Length: 100
Length: 100
DNA sequence: CAAACCGGTTTGCGTTACAAACCTTATATA
DNA sequence: TATATAAGGTTTGTAACGCAAACCGGTTTG
Image (tube, rainbow over all chains, first blue to last red; front, side, top):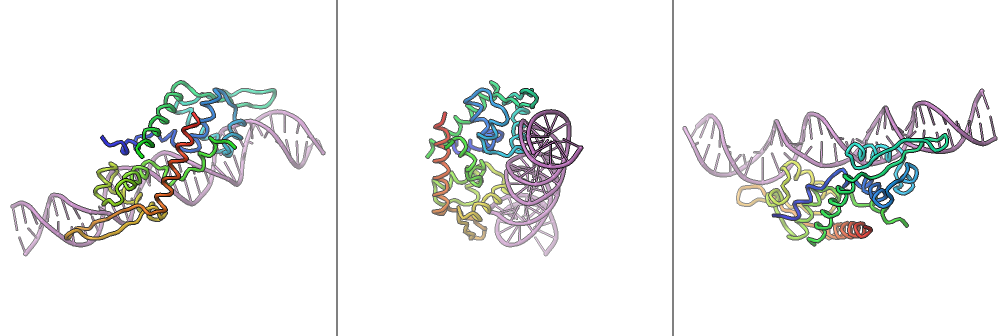
């Protein structure tokens, strides 16, 4: 019935600005390492690390740990599930904005 | 420079879905009492009460306590400051969505 | 071989959102 | 007249959260 009410059902995992920033990057590039995300989002390392873990736990991204030369590298990419969730989220937001 | 990065600067007081629901109602009606907001947002009483207090503390809404007959009544309306903040928030969101 | 650096993770802490419990006054019931 | 019950909110308790500082294993530099 009430459109504005549906805002309450927003996916809070995505709604968090830090995660929104991460997902925005991953949505566009399909693969990004930790340091790239760090620069792109402006988050601190600790913060980025925990947000990535949450997104992974939710099944929204995949994390692949490897090495580049002798240095560790954390590679991230969005899953199909993540892509769908992000699409849905943006649609909800768009619908919400259209009420004004 | 980076557009997606700006999502980090979203007003978190407004960004919270419960408060977003409250503000959406108040933006439209200009004056609403506690019980109306309760029905309209679907929040619990405790929750609504604390969110209203936060919005008031931020200067985004005004709260006027009075009586209707012998029953207490809490009347809420958006301030100009709140209206501007809400407008800004929506604009930021809209800009964000336009990146996709 | 110590110090600084790299790529992250974990810890500690203040803040938050939430609903249950509670409060005050008013009305209904027995 | 006691005593539930309801109305309209507020306060309390608690688990989860977001954040940056501190930390960690390994590598390179001085």
